[in-house]
Image (cartoon, rainbow, N blue to C red):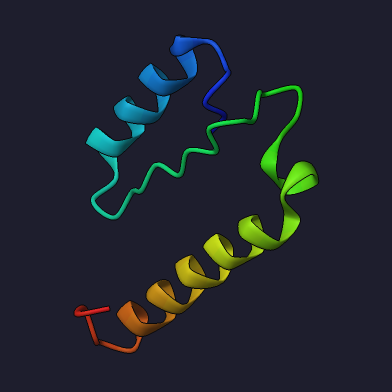
Length: 66
């Protein structure tokens, strides 16, 4: 989420964190929802996605320690 976005976006993210057990909020302090990280910081966003996919893959393989 963007650090410059309306606070309602953080509230929505925190509600999702209550619903999903493996939920992480990634904040990009200088981003706004009109300047999303996947366009403004594609390398950093790709690193977050890769970490997420690797963690999910490890969990599906039975290793919940990742």
